[in-house]
Length: 193
Image 1 (cartoon, rainbow, N blue to C red):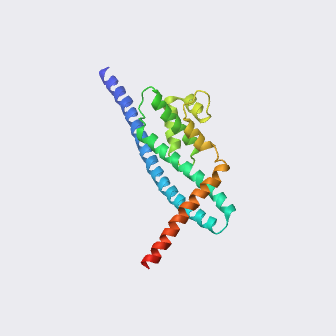
Image 2: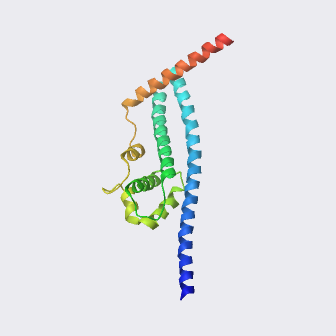
């Protein structure tokens, strides 16, 4: 009787440890992939800003307006990447009942997994969360049913498009910044040259 109990107890604890290590490995892979995405998006945003300033300076205002909207979407995506990274840093994927802050973090991760198709590590993480917390919890947060715990900021940043009136203002700010930097660089070259 004692041998059977020990074998059963070992199998159960081994299963729990395997699931925990699998979650940790998935979280680590997701953080690495996220870091690569952040670096890539940062360089794209940096290049887009200078391209927009050049287009605006060369009187290609329509193209500049289109690029400002794309830039805004990229910046929103970047902020969501940072939020997702923060969620991953602070989340504890333990097998305990969900307290409210952990429930909010898990809900945001699940919602993000349905919206970020390019982060492939989010899908296995969502499957693991479904195994533990149930399909109803997952569907509530993906479909944004009334009991969801997804933050409004995450929802608005992932689903809403930027307003048309703000793009002119963003373009003016970008243009004034890059024109002043270009003028300063030109003056320094003249002085040092």
